[in-house]
Image (cartoon, rainbow, N blue to C red; front, side):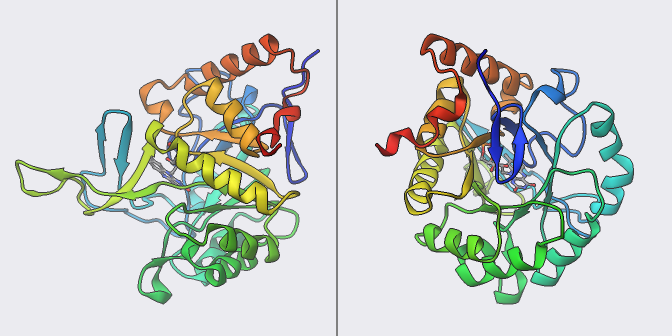
Length: 302
Ligand SMILES: Cc1cc2nc3c(=O)[nH]c(=O)nc-3n(C[C@H](O)[C@H](O)[C@H](O)COP(=O)(O)O)c2cc1C
């Protein structure tokens, strides 16, 4: 019997494959394409304590292997999500990770507090969003601000994962601050800052101007982030996300040091992607006679 089970902090997952925040909505949008309970977990689109309209349209631009988005964290807020969307996930037996965001440290605390008592296996703190208190630099670009949002988002009894940005040369320092503040796991990484130009309109393609790049093109970026953080922190749990579109990519991410992975943009090309990738991973494990998927974690470090 082969084991596909993994552990992120103290949370046991039946599969290393999860969905990524913001790429499959708030609830059971993917349920028509596969059994949500078969996946490690479903990560919700990031939710604030309040409803938020997000950025002006257009919000996405796709080209080749990557995509650019500037959704701007539009959403109904934690309270409406709990009453309107979470029940559908519960009925399907999905394990749910609640992603939260805020514009200030206090707003992160409010979003986390609003999650208290919800049926979630973890909170994923999206620290890769603008910090209004420091004129819109990202929380995740500063070790101090990241430590602050992690500490503010701790809710007794709910494991806390922190999602970091690749757009900083200080990623390892930021990760260290998150761990020191009590994060149970690192989620690496959010999108890479980018821009596209509509040459007919002679202006940026997205309503917001710039956006975040995701999809296959960013796999080397996420692998590097995971590898560097695993090198620096032998014991912390890491979730790898960014550009994963095949079972081979999952294997590479595990070897770089991830305990689990999240699939985002690949689900736009094919909503069945998480299950297809899971099957490809299963075949790889069989072909290489790997009995326990966890044997692969970090092996690229020698
Ligand atoms: C349309 C879109 C919306 C996203 N929304 C969120 C979000 O709400 N919260 C978050 O933490 N990340 C969000 N992300 C980032 C993804 O979760 C993921 O980190 C990133 O896209 C890289 O993974 P991928 O290449 O597999 O998509 C979003 C990405 C896209 C493309």
